[in-house]
Amino acid sequence: MTDFRRLTGMLITTFGLILSTSYASAQQPDRGDEPGLIADDSYQLDPEWQKTVVYYRTTEAPGTIIISTSERHLYLVQPGGRAIRYGIGVGRDGFQWQGLVNITNKKEWPDWTPPPEMIQRQPYLPRFMAGGPGNPLGARAMYLGTTVYRIHGTNRPDTIGTKVSSGCFRLVNNDVADLYDRVPVGTKVVIRQKPEL
Image (cartoon, rainbow, N blue to C red):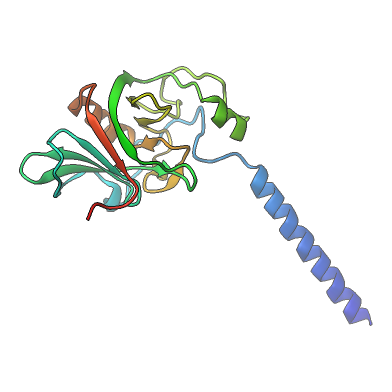
């Protein structure tokens, strides 16, 4: 009988720990946006996510940006069947989208005003944050059409190659600055969830 009580006590304790751990995990903030965190510029991306020139077959004109959310890559189409490929972080499940837009604005070290929907999901976020090294939008932002979404830098380079954002596309600061310098306002941006066949 003593063994049965001990076993029952252990099961109740274990179940309680599991519940409290789950509750604690649910209460922790979304680690994808950390206002005030300064990016670690020495962070080494996995080769899969590093900027590189690749062969790329498409009917889109050079200068077009193609984002493949399933691959977590952004391609800047170049002449001669090539593209500059950048590793990106994309929207987490339920926040991925596709479509055709243009870059309507560009900003260096942009200010950040999280949209109301984001504040509702993540009430700990600031209502406004001035641009700078601790800003989650990073060093550059390119605004996509009339949406709330952007191609932007990040103060979390470890999120490149993951599904963590609320729908924006993030690059490490060096890569977003490189892309920013290569594309003008008006650039066509094609967002695809599945690879083109």
